[in-house]
Length: 81
Length: 275
Image (cartoon, rainbow over all chains, first blue to last red; front, top):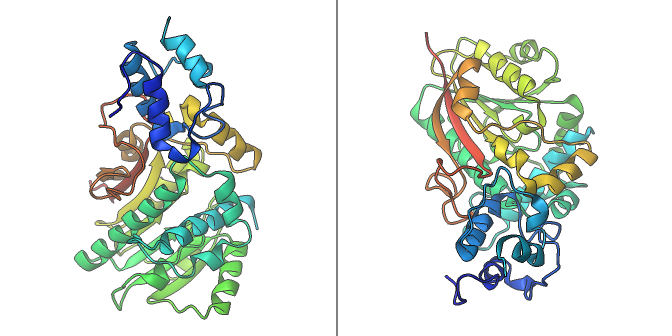
């Protein structure tokens, strides 16, 4: 559970920090995959978190991985201003 | 030693970490640290993450349990470890007095393991036969020459092996086992999901493995369908984090089977098909 408001990237950031408290704070531009903050086994769960927070539906079989590389990219792709 | 043999040191390193856990280790392999040299911990660090250490521990325990349950609860007394690597089950599990364990692997690996075990004064708890063989060739005659009896039921363990093979090679291997499996024979193994090999988040990991000469090649999202034509009927299909497979020790949420797009590690027991 997160205390942040739904509909913002903060919920996604909080989820990552929850999994990797030692890596907090998670920079907006850090590569989440290269830095192993996200891996293949957590990927689907991660996508669920983004779907829930953003209210968008994501098809994991057709995603563009570049949309998930950084918090900044995720925000741009799934949290339209 | 060949490149794939270094992965047996990697597995040994993960087993050493589990064995040295202060809090309720799933098993204790006191030889693992020694068997992990020289490359095991280096590979473990390089490829850390992705639940690998936890998976090795859970898989080891699942297969330990399978061995102990089948040998105490069935007629099976013949166990074959295919690509045994640094597996120490012969030296750490309880075995019936009339059991025999065949360890099949490359000659060079078996020789190195023997050398290390002699320095640790390790003694097996069961009759143990080394079977030097190349799994890419016709290895069954090597096994029978070592005393394996195709007329008796067998438990085959193929741990951390299938992902290094192509689908054809994996299927050929399972068929070869089936061809010398008496009724009641069992097979316990792990298989990756194809989804794990396809997942965008696995890409870096997989390309690093390929660069190191140990590419992961095969996975399936439908293990029942893969096994059936090879002569094996699925009996147990589970995944890390479930009650029979390291519940409480898996750092990921366990997703129900019907959720698409999930990277999975299947833990499997199958029985030789009859009729």
